[in-house]
Image (cartoon, rainbow, N blue to C red; front, side, top):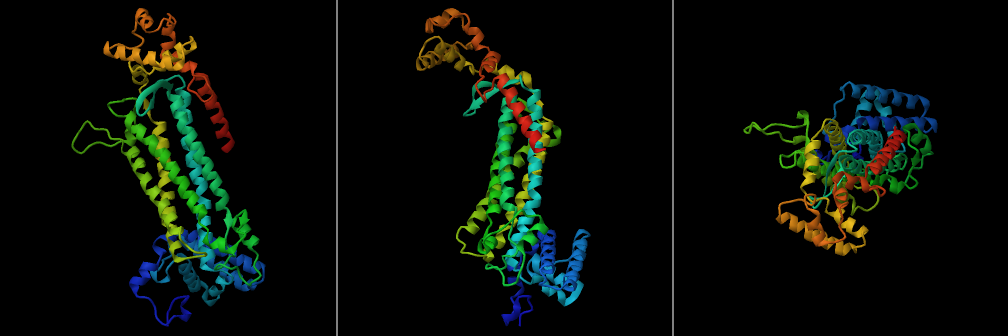
Length: 461
């Protein structure tokens, strides 16, 4: 006869190796607090509906509260023999209060229990993620306000393209993280649904009150279909998907920090707090924290693909495959919050080499579009203006001169429409200032972007 809590119909127990392979207690013990809270809500509902007597329910409540206290003091010990956090806590409860502990599982299954635990776990962590994103947004916004007139090259294909402001660059990332914030905010909606009371898959014959349980746990909704309640992991997929997109943004930003801090660019310098040295080369200052964040994106993507793969072929309702739904979520929480915090601190302590960023704009031909636009405004069709400018750029490259160095006579050899006012148009600061279309890099537009961002930050605080 099996000695498992579920072993009534079994004549033999698994070998230890099989027990260890099937057990999840090594990782789902992270849900211990959520499991106790779910059990407290469940037994209070059983008392409320008189499914259990007040005396029985009160004994169970007292026992669960003892377990909660022991959990906080580190006194609970879990066993692989009891498979998972649910069975472990039930066994520990029986040690505290005796056989009445067995009545806790009335009108409940591990299927709705584990789903409830994971909902509670993410419901508690999502505000932490949102707060960490908001802190990074604040840091970017603070730096952008300081550098509204600081110029830098804008890139396409990692080639100098057009001059922009450093503030405009920072606000591009602010917008990315705003979308991340909104995605995690929406993630709360699907996390805030209570599966408790769905039982194994079909509900229960007991006269339970699912809304009472949900209210006890702070859920705003309950699942409308019991099959869906125990098998849905969309909220976890959304979390991992959102985390993956977030890590794309963090990784892109860190890639640029790594580039901009290199000797070849020299636009920025990381604080020593976020860099390391070489064991052999004394001069090195390596951007290790940025590299680690960039590298950790891969594990988050893997967690998403892992859960998608687990779920894609599962028939309704619960299957043991779903034991694989937790570790990726736990890992993502453990990864993205520190990444956000480190990135925030790196932004707050970055040194900006304003002179270097602006100096490279004087020799990079990134004002070529200004000449093409100048010609177009003077009646030359843009395609022709583009060709004229390209020929002028080639000519000046061969002369080892910039467009600003070109004398007026040479300009007019290529196009008689070019007048003396062209030099003003070619000035990099003028070029930035005039790009005043909505969302552009013009000083007035960036100021407006910052003002709108500040309104958003005030709204979410």
